[in-house]
Image 1 (cartoon, rainbow, N blue to C red):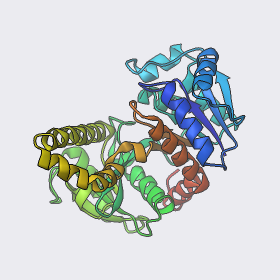
Image 2: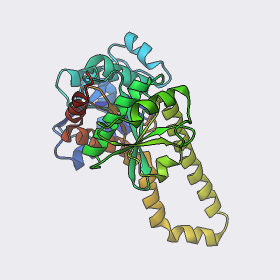
Image 3: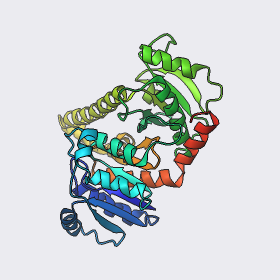
Length: 337
């Protein structure tokens, strides 16, 4: 198993990427190599500082970085030697099995699409972000790769998300819902109504179509995939993340208001740790970019070293479970070319 890591990508790069790689190498003996892609001098110094001496960590020089504030796809054309572009090239050339990046999402999607291309039957790739659900994990698809999606894109997303749920999360019969402003069949925009019509009577679908769902269903209803365009999906994802952070901050403030509350918080410490593990993006690591002819994991820009360690784990699982061959097989059976 060989992983190409965009070591310069992310708000806290390269520190968390180096730390995450060190932890992953210590935990996962299946890793043959982690290619640390970025400025060689900076990465060497960071490896020395963090005592990353494992010979399986190999630095691959890239002289440029697509910054988080830059227009990803546009900047990629002028920064051909960027860390994300070089990392994607390693996967393209067969030197690495998967790509992991916490850098500029637009650049990661563009680099993966340009260098690796999409799978047969896939027009646009989509980001499947894991959301904790009362019944397991629900993938929000698309969470930001394709802001201006068409109904037919979401139909393909449904198949890809279902195959990912089945072969990575072990869901025998994935349930797919369509994000709308109400559960009634007639609710939604022209876009969601057209998508609903394509999915509602699809007997050959390799999943159960739940129909229209609302925001609360992401967490409360037995759903494995929630479909939406990348614009709406990204807003949902960031709103959920911000709400979780705000709730955590408010709870801490309230617990400090009296000694009795502080004592109660101490007694419930185990429960709070379990809740954090279930709800924090750090433990999920990253989101797969489904539909690309290669394994690509996109991590949160503010990822910690734990998140990067788990992103590398997620890349390993996607490769091991052969998600892409399963997606291609399912699409071929359904006539997508």
